[in-house]
Length: 82
Image (cartoon, rainbow, N blue to C red; front, side, top):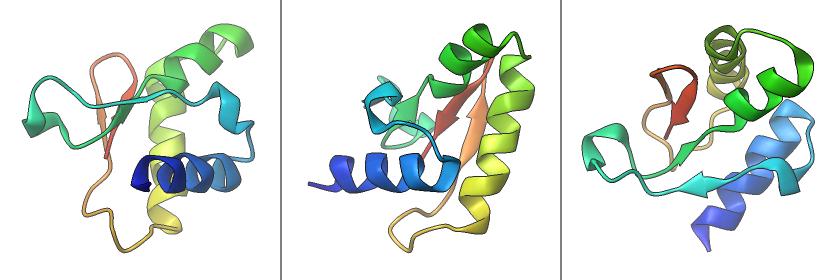
């Protein structure tokens, strides 16, 4: 299943536990096929700015992008859309 592949890729690229990653289908498909609040969750744990953390994650993920993902965007307070 692609969701599992995406989750594993995010975990490996960002060097975090896959169990911390929640992938959801956004209600508005203009926001992508999948979305995660990972930066929001980790920013709270780490005492960091969620939007800055999401942007950092986006840069790392974009640098090692897999072909099935056309675009990675940061939205709102720190959501990452694929």
